[in-house]
Length: 492
RNA sequence: CGGGAUGUGGCGCAGUUGGCUAGCGCACUUGGUUUGGGACCAAGGGGUCCUCCGUUCGAGUCGGAGUAUCCCGACCA
Image 1 (cartoon, rainbow, N blue to C red):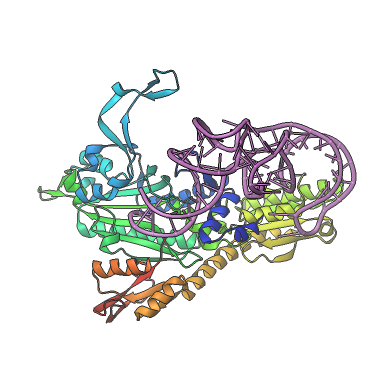
Image 2 (cartoon, rainbow, N blue to C red):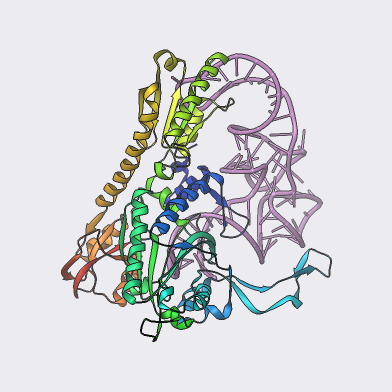
């Protein structure tokens, strides 16, 4: 089954879609561009949510919830913002259906037309800032640090499971601050939270950087992002953190009384990551046998497969596994015993590999004799014989080893696929092979557009810490002077 | 929204120049034998062939329109 993944897939995109479906993460729904997240996939998302949520709380944020519907007039208050989202909004125009007069099904009741149309939120800045207006009066109310877990709708032209669906799940943080410096610090803090999460939980190395003006969030003064490299060398924007200046405060008239008694507009940030992270997880680590999950996000850490011929053997092995399971669970592992009696061991091995379970333990008659167990690692596909009494401790350490190993693998891969390029010919050649290209850029929109037209590559970001980029040189396209390298890549 | 491909049991597919009761593999059900890397035998169940219109004695097959999905662009978290 797993082997079909690559043989039938003509390219990486199809391989990805196949993998998502076969590994039981998600599937297309009856609604165009939407997806059904299946229980196994959702379990991974929940793990992401819990880890992120903890990080948000640790940085002083609280959760709240705001409405799904946004009055059309709200969206138009901030000019750039509405322009950025206008083309992809779902609009509610009526609130009632009625029986079709001709007797066939139902139709929209024309008398139930809404006075003002409602927009299904593509992001919540407007409705949140309309609320903040009432929450913020004094400098004592600041900073206001709120996060919301929600679904949003963006009517995209083209969709792909997890990467770009019409409806997706995400979190969006919206904060208000007394000064620009505080807001900028907040947006930097949160992009670092995302980078830490990607590194420590997803085992995906990311580049932190600034977006160029043309890639900036609609309504932001600055957009920080994390960019991850997938196994085909393409980039995936995995999270963003925006410094919104006073744009929304002015549009929604959010002012506070400062210590001196004067009125000032507040400074804003917003930041978010979405179920797209699931896509990043799949594309960063998976191989032809299926998913490879980092232990920190795996719903199941250890799966145990019994091998037996007789009822008696079965009973003994399951008893042994039950005891092991309890021992491992006490050490914080999530353990599953696959006791299905209609499937052979080989089938189960393949199936759990497809689902990316980090560690598999098989115990059979041979092991009963010897007191050992066969332990297989998902990341390296290697097997080892381990004494049963050491299994629990071994599994605990193994989780750590695997987590580190797949991160290192991804990091090495990125290092091998990131190069400095200084000539246009080399740029055109390497960009087709799937690389992050560190290049000089003259800083103009025109050059950025021309390069995209000719090669389909975009500036993913102006990197901050990851690479040493501050050096003088000349633009790879125009030859004009430049003081810093940026990352060019093809992106999802 | 442009370009391309594809719609046939749950999944993956075949179906010839239009022809007779629409097939195959997987999955499913029952019984048996199996079980250390995707088992085997036997017997079963399951189809408005995407929709509508047309051509024809006869349409899964030909024509038209619609629709959905996927891929490639443009757009995007």
